[in-house]
Length: 430
Image 1 (cartoon, rainbow, N blue to C red):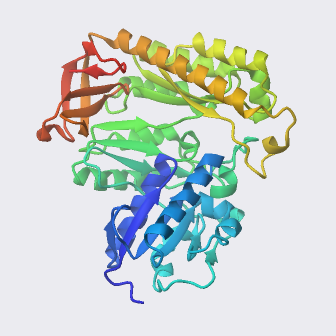
Image 2 (cartoon, rainbow, N blue to C red):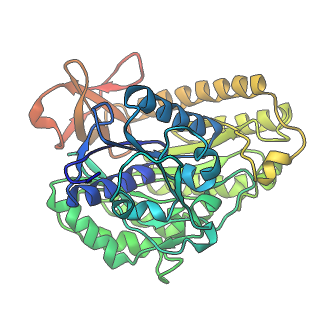
């Protein structure tokens, strides 16, 4: 069956990094006579770009496959990415899946789609993770507001609960100069904001002898991009110099996201994290000193093996007394093949859910306190698109969500406003 003019639809799960890579794959296909369409439209080819960070991520991928099969049983189905890298044997047993592409192979998707006749047996292309050495560049397009630019891939940290090093390989990156070239390409599309993404972006330079600070210093020289937003950075890799550079350069948004995971040092040790809670505190304090109204988010995992009431309460009190703006809360998810999966003292699911709700409530409290602190300040808002009937949403530099009356001309524009009125969901309305 000829692939010329075949329609292809992507469904992406997981992180911003996955979305940047999906966009790159879609562009390659479009350049080779495929027609990208929405996942909800009819297509000859459906690509599930999966995530496997949690058990629920695996489940959502399988549900998406089943949804396609019910709707379009004759469609050619591809499963790619981290889920395909780690669970290729399992995926190959799902009736109707035609092609499985691992972490390295997904970038050659055009080659693998030269024949899209339904397979009697699933075709699997999946090299060993330790053979994944190339850095495949990618950035997202199609959003008038921002682009996700992949600057780093892989991870050398091997935390005891995480499968990502097994799914993506060791830390690697492209040179600063190449990142600048891609930022220029994004700027030519009229996009105002770039979000820097990767698995462990603070480790940038591992394969080129450069540093994350040098990356920032290069990117701010690119004309046309007005805002750079740094995604998650490990506390031990967020140096004073990076914070100070962000404080003195208007293009670097005053917004940091730090993965804490636990506020108890014993649990951090069991997680094989490379810092203590004291290091985390020092980073928050340094940010507050240099940029008092910076938005600071924190990831936290609750219910890790060995987290009793004492350890959980220790984490809760630590977060309660730490000046962060919001939390991303995750319940620990057992991943086969990781050291944490076979640890003693696994936490009951009901207990994890209860602790998660407590932390989410704390996050809402933190968000309200931070927004009230920012009340009355003059900010620049990058407007996105109509989110609610008659309302357009946008974000300030320090990652406060703002709404205003919808006007088409606002989309993708930056405008100045004073933050005054907060709605019932703790969002500002201007």
